View 1 (spheres, one colour):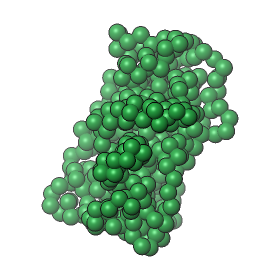
View 2 (cartoon, rainbow, N blue to C red):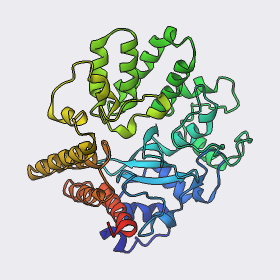
View 3 (cartoon, helix red, strand yellow):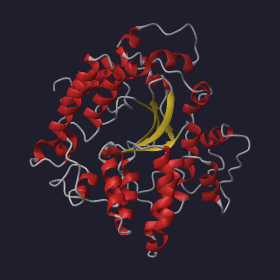
Length: 384
């Protein structure tokens, strides 16, 4: 916790203090968010309750959920129901992405490359096509002013002012969805909404090609989202292409289970068969026999999480011993957030290793953020 004990720089602006505390190279928009004191405002969207910089500068910020929340995340704004829009900090010490993090299980989904993108998507999310079946969302509408047109929402006004000048986003426009979709705002989340809408339609079979095109756009952009591979595998199965289905389900096995959006997409499977949906589908499609995949479908379901966590910790230690601390960091993150550790106690060691590997790899922001998560963990669960 070296950063917490240091004196802040001789400046009163919040972005400098936060950048110093977490060693993050704050994006211009995030710095502006704090320095314009947007965290004092209350929004009209689901995510309407910003986290104050005072809280983020505390030794044990309440908004951090250690263990359940991956230790490279900084919560920025919440919905007062336990969920947050979080900044994801990358190996270059930058807030590189913003995700919607669900407290009901720790699932996450990308919502934008910047905080303004995420806030604009939040404003329109419940008006887009497709079911309104998000994970961990309360029965009542979580938006405090959901009858509002959002026209007077200060958070949304700030977000829109930071979008490209050539992007005209009219929230009351009947072509709202296409405006969002064509503008590249919240690329992955917008496409998931459209895919959900296709699957909700009784004539979905006739639109499978559209859904496959959309999900392939996501996969070409990034390969770490289990839900995208599951959708592609499911469509391939429906179309009778077993080889393509096997390819996508195998790819999903190397994605975090927390990225699968299984509740929304109704991808159900028997956990006694496999710990991941893709692995459960491969059981009937000639799965690869690599050791890691064997762990996903191992005969003793009660030990799978323990064995997988141990596998990734061992891999991280080997990588670190070889001087590959950047890879070791990625592996130990998998130890905690691939399928989840077997018990809460395990996360103390996992977060500590993540902090150590990040420091050795020169990833100062990830090191300091992990240190804060570790302090929160020890403060709340120190007796474990």
